[in-house]
Amino acid sequence: AASNRASNSFVVAAASASNASALAAASDASASAGAIVYAFGVGRDITWDAAVIKRHPNVVVHGFDNTHVATEFIVELAKRGGVPKRWNWHRVLLASRDDETTLTMALPRSHKDAFVPVTIDAAGADGKRKEARPKMLTDETREAFAAAALWRTMKKLGHEDGVDIVKVDIEGGEFEVIRGWEERYGADGPPTCQLLIEWHERFLTGVGAASAARRDAEAALLRMGFTPLHCWEGIQECVYWHCARCAERGEARDVDDVQ
Image (cartoon, rainbow, N blue to C red):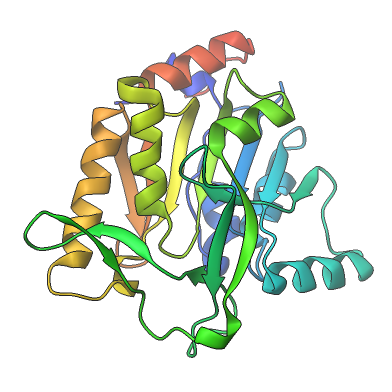
């Protein structure tokens, strides 16, 4: 549960494009000391990122995506002057391990706005690991894109002590990433106060694969100290809060208490 001490840190609710402004405003916590936000998975939408930046004048958001869909969108948006100040683009995807320096992605036939992983290592109904093929892939669009694990990205950007929020919308890759976090960080979990995750178990095929993958991933988050706070959009977009770490980050930045 969030205590008064924990409320020192910058907290923003997860949001879809349709309710980004309202949910970004859900917290009155101060970001005066300059919170750091990572947003993995840009696609064709930075509505949430822009809403966070608008509400919190000192926040810095780092967006990560190098697929063609995201690249074309960001370049065109920049030409129109639509990229907010304090939004930084990094052409790299989120990997789950050190040895995963590229991710092979494909564009689904029915969804023109996002690339998805070609295969997802998920748990089947029998509890055994197996490769789950996402639905509706277009084989001819497959391509490998540069990727880096969270800890590599944090080191490169000088954020090894942690960031305030990590938002993950990576079209089904979240299951392997969370498993990689637990292998790397153990019970401490990734160095962030809050996780915002959009779940994509609906992409998985195979009886029981979807529910087992989500269940395993959320159990891993709990073991790493992240408590579910709230979910939206039919429980596909969820906030996970690390109470102790949020308090630590708030104290480190000496931010005033906000009820």
